[in-house]
Amino acid sequence: MYDHSVVYIITLYNTNICACQAVVSLCLTGRDIEPRIAAMQMKAVIFDLDGTITVPHLDFDAIRAEIGAIQGPILEAMEHMSEEELARAEKILDRYEVEAAEQSKLNDGAAEVLASLSDEGRRIGVVTRNCHASVKRVAELHGLNFEAVITREDGPVKPDPFGVFEACRLLGVEAREACLVGDYVFDLMAARRAGSVSILLATNEKYNDFTHEADYVIHGLRELPGVVAEIENGGLVRDED
Image 1 (cartoon, rainbow, N blue to C red):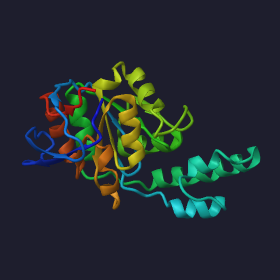
Image 2 (cartoon, helix red, strand yellow):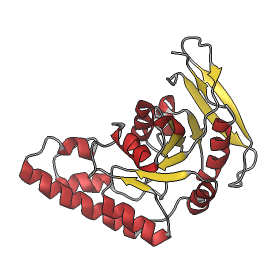
Image 3 (cartoon, rainbow, N blue to C red):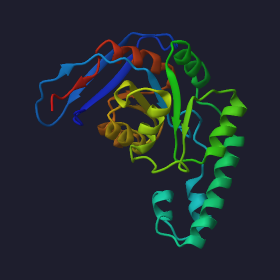
């Protein structure tokens, strides 16, 4: 399994999307480990949507205010609602998500990196806590092709690993042959629980709070192809346990 005390900070000498060279700094905290280097073929790359493929646009405070009397993660709060309250909340959330998709802008390099990874023969998937309609609209608006899309309508949401497992099943790969890229801790937790490589896109202002769940940290999507190459060249350290 992955050792949670290892944080990988990636600095690429060349941020071109075809860059393959990376410097991996291993920051060890806590107990000593005897790592082994395991080269793995990354047959699939799975992405979060809002904040990862697209620039963050959802106003979660506005959503909470309109739904009323909820705090913290919205989907988890909705689990405790009555049937009538839940139906109302779902309509509100769906509306915000589709509106955000209509106004969405891609993160820098998103289209190019997705195309590059696909050209290399890697399967591309999306696992999101959003609704399916929002993913479909983002794909249509920006000309993107996702081979597997798992949303909250399909089953348990991140940080549950269900979405990662289901995306891998649809893509025809094992979870250990996939990496998941996301900007929030729930993305990283889902990847780890599934046995996939977790890659943090460090654009969230609180990203330092999430690095303990990340196998790799990148600061822009253009760094991703180089990280994938690094993993395949044996750059990922794993605990023997």
